[in-house]
Length: 65
Image (tube, rainbow, N blue to C red; front, side):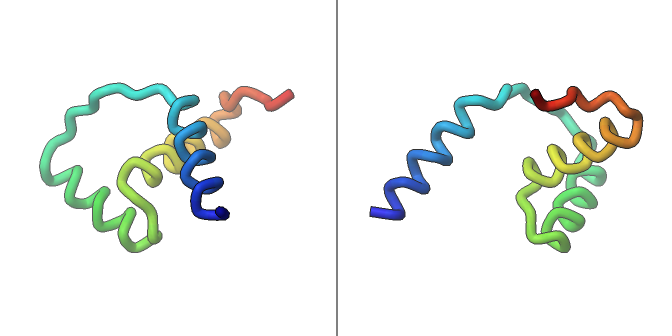
């Protein structure tokens, strides 16, 4: 039963995210992929983490209500 809950939760979270194509230089992608692996994240998850941290540092991250 718990597995089904997790699957449904992930589906809901994914539906709330904006999907868009991104083209990267192959060398940049390989470096990013290695960095993500070192941090035990997917490339997509690591990109989101890096962007979120940059937004925080620039004080541009929208405040949660």
